[in-house]
Image (cartoon, rainbow, N blue to C red):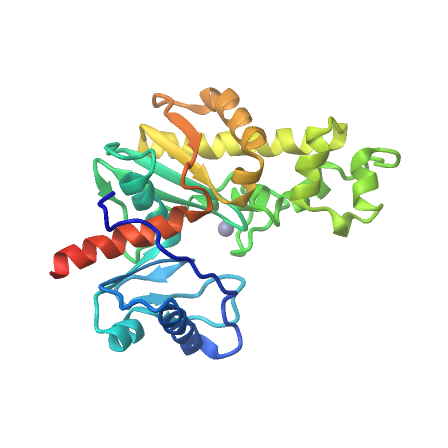
Length: 298
Ligand SMILES: [Zn+2]
């Protein structure tokens, strides 16, 4: 990191869902002005899918509108170069530039949060794909006959088992017919399955609750399959893991992956660690993108 590089200020806001697609770049521009800085370049790590040639965020699940233009409106507003990247692709570049991935040319980043996503650097090259959405690892198929349907509409995707909002749905499936009366999990849920959250499950498992442990173990096994798929396809030296589910439950997430991954591997097992950049890993990615643009622009 150069002397002038690093995160100097942060501002977060809930995404504007009221003013249509064009409200998003207006919100970003207003936030940049609020910080009182004149940007030399802008790097964006965004939810996907994105369309990198059009500089847009595409048809993203759980969002009220699609085709959100970001690159052109910000270029017009600030007259500086603007780069858009899928958030996990930005994160792996952040890890490579500022984190534990420095000097590692085969690096993978996994986020485990509301969704599951990945970013890859292979032989020193960040992987983009035709629209900028490689590698969408959350949508690896675990079981084509699964009862669990992913937010994207497909059956049996990894994300349908292991993302924050989906772990409780997987738990419902696993605990069907199980009497939770008198258990810690039953008590924390207040007898209402709709009140079950990932947070409650991980907490109860940590306290030794039998049913919650069954769920956390099953999620761990699915995750070890997903991580093995990553290693078998991309052959990374290091995988760093972030996102709120992993950051808040680091041992419960990493231990089963490290214990079980060998059962599914053909390639040599890489190191798998929590990202030291924490919740800022995508932000560091945006910074790395902007720094490169600013250097190239001068
Ligand atoms: Zn999916």
